[in-house]
Length: 105
Image 1 (cartoon, rainbow, N blue to C red):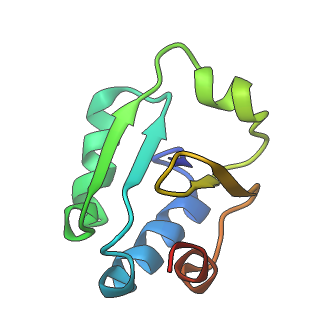
Image 2 (cartoon, rainbow, N blue to C red):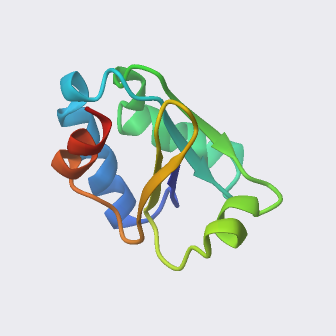
């Protein structure tokens, strides 16, 4: 789960880096979530070519559940879960693609 803001420079960088590493992330489900309007989320999804990531979706959190649950202070915030839905690790200010790849392999 990646909580992001479409106008966040760090989130934009994160998106570019993950797309560059797409071949190593093809066995992960990646969910980009934001509180922003759907139009901004979709524009971000298109602009940063997130459709190139296998199993990647984007959505809106209109009730602000994710930031409240994880106590998000900065974006991008990343929470990693294993295939059984067990929480593995959080990254409170984004993560390098190599860090994520090592967790999902």
